[in-house]
Length: 126
Image (cartoon, rainbow, N blue to C red):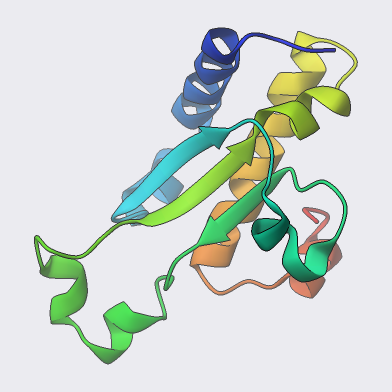
């Protein structure tokens, strides 16, 4: 199935609104971006189509080493990228697409907190 970029962005906004308040309160300086598909560089070692990608230092990254980094108005945000075509391709309908978007957001935000794919797999979020 495929949905328009506008409809996909609405589903992403709805999924973000549905995240637990406690999780959202811990997310700092993160931009959520929608792209049609991952570039070869983004796919890198992952191969295949990516549903989402986390790019950044994470909560335990540069902000821990240099505490002023996160507070600086000059620090760029970390990014969670959702890939519309890949998410649409694995979804049977809009309800399924919403669930896949929500799960991908949780998965990528987990990377912000230093949780790797192996641990996410153990938790059922990989």
